[in-house]
Length: 438
Image (tube, rainbow, N blue to C red; front, top):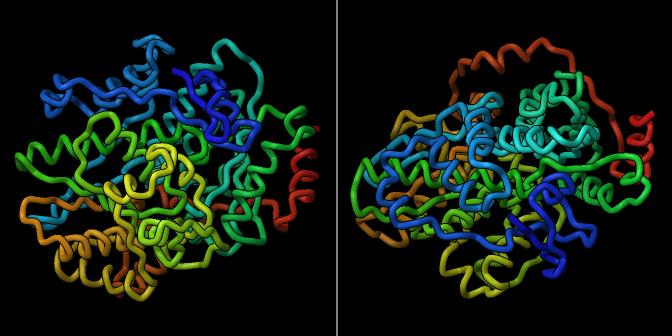
């Protein structure tokens, strides 16, 4: 498998280099040089494939003999150890639950796969790797869990102070060992900017082998494509000749980009809905053709508080920067906190189903699209990206109920938070980082 930089198509690297470097030195993003179409025989027999077998076929086609097949199978078998069930709410609405992994968020798929992929490549390379990751909420917990006690890998997680939920913060600040947390006085965009600046800093690159576990890393996106196939497989068993629309709660747009990869590989997805909170730069682009990044605004769906989503560049490359082509496949919708809370209440009343704030934004987009199109033979699948208990205070306040905490969250309640508090100045972060290498 070969990949190119979005800033220089002539800069081509191997999968190993793309995974460990994360970002090209030209500050682009790595994209597959070729995205293969899966065979008609694969789609014909898709209902018979296990979740792991689906992932194996995708990786086998993408990697193109870069990794031996038995090693691909081992990577997936160790990474994908939990399900992604589709829950039907009614004839037209379904929810794809992506929170059954150890950190209770969809990012477990990408983080665990990336950890196993790095472990495979590290078999012949004993050099330590330092992973820098910015999080607006769920990425940090998934990466911390996925890489905890992984030999040869140190993880540094940057998160915006006061802008993640208390339980999310515990997930990234209580493990210790090879996991460190940096609490940044600023926004997620500030955290993301610090990570990107670190990758471009010569002195840091001389002292560290830097990598990233954000969705800027291609290793995060590949496994996120698996569950689009897995959910489609489940829908095929539910109803034949169904038109599938995925509503994707979006922040950095890695999840939606992974869905676009799945579509490129032949999955017959009718439409994607880019669902955001008031940080609506991509829906605005979908409507107007103008992309205007701006500082993010805090909302109750905090993992989506992103004002300059990195993966938008990959989306543009998938559509050759052609606005009309993108809008054929993607509709954009944005909602306020008030609308989000009303959706949480309405879904709970009507279906007795508890959505977290991010899933509620996705459901709003799905319902809006259903009302706009009024097509009978369609199923709108909302990606429920995190367990509602990860947003305990807001969910209990909005729905006026007491949630039972899953065991892995309950165990965090009394653990001690350990983090370094820094401002959003790069030189301060760089100085702190250099002290970690003594």
